[in-house]
Image 1 (cartoon, helix red, strand yellow):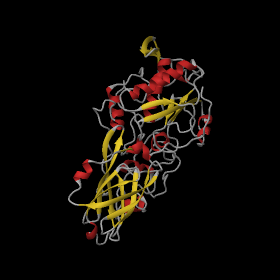
Image 2 (cartoon, helix red, strand yellow; image 1 turned 120 degrees about the vertical axis):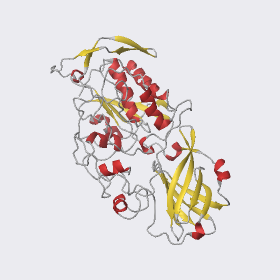
Image 3 (tube, rainbow, N blue to C red; image 1 turned 60 degrees about the vertical axis):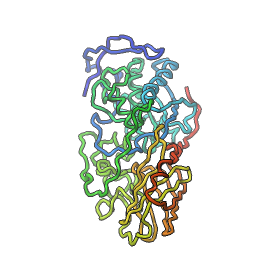
Image 4 (cartoon, one colour; image 1 turned 90 degrees about the vertical axis):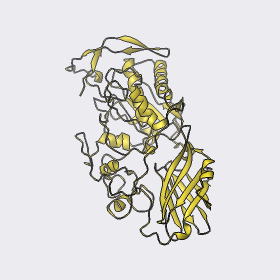
Length: 450
């Protein structure tokens, strides 16, 4: 572990602010006072090398316009200055992505909630009806933040035990934790804002930080498109089936450290099989399955039964498709939000297609895959597991059904068989903004903004 260094002070201009910059000399780690800053350099409790996993689009916010709420600020720095530092920290990320951040005065619907506390800091969880964490702030933890997944999405907590009168420490840690809120892991370059430890960074983004953000959201100028998740495998037989190993605290022994489960995956660090599907959280993480849902592909069979059986845990399928010859062909239609669907049913009963979406300002055709049975039952899901479409298709060429999104939205869809390949219709596809499929969750409305 790196020891934090005492600092010779110079100044860095950030907007209208003058921030402290370091030129370090070794600190005396024998200091036994209550100032946690003198003892550690960990930004947060997440491991420096992230757990190997298949990152899905559910690990990023689905909309461009995000809001933040300041629950409370540190007692160690002027309130107005802190509000400006927080705004400037968000602006670092908005400058290199299509994301826009707006401060709101109530946490009802806020995407990110910022607060300062000590030990178990229950007062920061209670307003959002979340269980108080069983694990308090460690002495070595400057802050922590939840990735955009799970019930605690958007929490950003700073450890008030640290000396946040150090504006460099305050600002660079705030930029770092916002990065986690956006879904960015720790990265290797030691000068990066998203490096695991406080290493004297000022909060300026390195190219490695920018690349990590743009892989998720693309660039503001449109020169870099966000990366979509890889299409699910045709078979799950080659997927990783051995749980990872960790030397960090792992209360449930599933191979994933407690901090990664709590803040990154949204799983229960005290339950080795959070979703009860027969597969440990560690196995699901490295395989690319959703450890929070017992049925990743939504086909009604648990991940455990499919993973260890003869069907595919990544794609909806049917044990016996029957005769689907009357259903084969290309189909085009739309869902109740207006997004264009394009599907192809093959002779073996497999379904492939696209859903036209506008993601972070970019027109994308999100991959769909699934299966149809001989009786016309059809199901297909997005490669990123945002959507699950179910319904029926008839020999006449009419298809319809319902869908649900990972964001909790429900709707309907229709499609009809078309001549040829349907390419002309796909070229004129209607792209609907992804954020419409993920309504903001309603949270308790409180008005104690500083």
